[in-house]
Image (cartoon, rainbow, N blue to C red; front, side):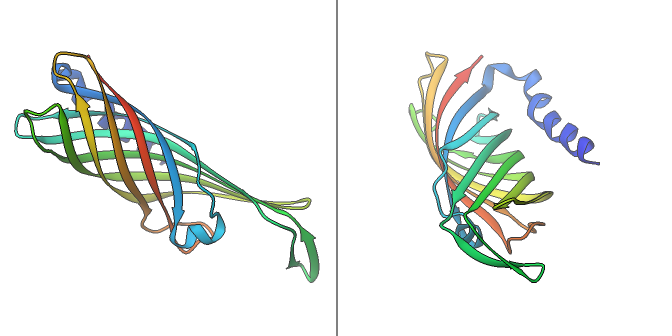
Amino acid sequence: MKKYILTILLAFVFVPFAFSQSFTKWELEWNISMPSGDFNDWIDETSLRGIEFGGTYEFETGVTAGAGLGYAAFFKETERKTIEFNTNAITAKQFRDLFSYYFLAEGGYAFLPDSPVRPYAKVGIGAYYTQQALQIGLLYFDDDSWDFGLRPEIGVQYFNEDASIGATVNGKYNYVVDYGNDLDNFSYISVGIGLLMRF
């Protein structure tokens, strides 16, 4: 089942753009991510390990359609904590890791069509694959899950129509609707800095 979901989402990325290359923008981004909500209680450190790739087709009306895939990794080392496990007590540091992979279909709107600096807004909908790990001394626990997620995004793009390269800065809120692991909810905020390319 997982491989079928992945195949369908990758088709969203590549098939629509194969017939409209002259109006397609490809994007490579570095994301800085900050945990929020219940996730912030488990890992409260900002992550610099995020990357994203996507493509967007922009219609003459300013409406945009596209897709993207990306990755974010979060890590935290705690102070020594004492927990109970199988009627015993363990005192050790905790190493908490979480890896988030996402595959999203996106739609939105780009404003100011005649300006090189263009604000935009869009929403991504798709699948999040999450790997969560916890190490306490010699004990190691891990879990993974596929979940449905939403991601609203706002940002600004600079794209000179006479050139094939531009730039973007944006903010995104990743929210997994029904997270399947130990946390009650899984969400994080990302700030993206990216390079735009047109072919």
